[in-house]
Image (tube, helix red, strand yellow):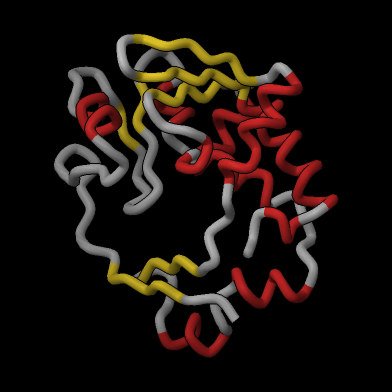
Length: 171
């Protein structure tokens, strides 16, 4: 059985609540003209003519054939990859480890609590396949490595790998 993390959803204000994903996303969400989504723990921020659509979630970026730009980090922190998990029917032994038990969901309803349930997938194992398939481009800027990948190709490739061997990512 996996480990459950349960935490109270605190009052959330898209304009004032700090993001928890690092200095670059926090700086971006504070920019004039940036729009932030309404989800209290998985919000996206965007600017430009399609920003209102994009902040609905990663599924919108996927529909709009968007890209992911990782600045100084790798796929291990790329939450967009969870989109692939929605496409896969996991074997029972993994489903038990990544799904909170029903009795806990009943006791702590989703509108008041946020769940995270481990083990967390090891997305970093997709870096080499992405490079081998040519779907990820990398470049150094100063001390940081930038990685650019089309979201659709990333999710499609991760889905393929999950279907073949989900145990590779959930240990």
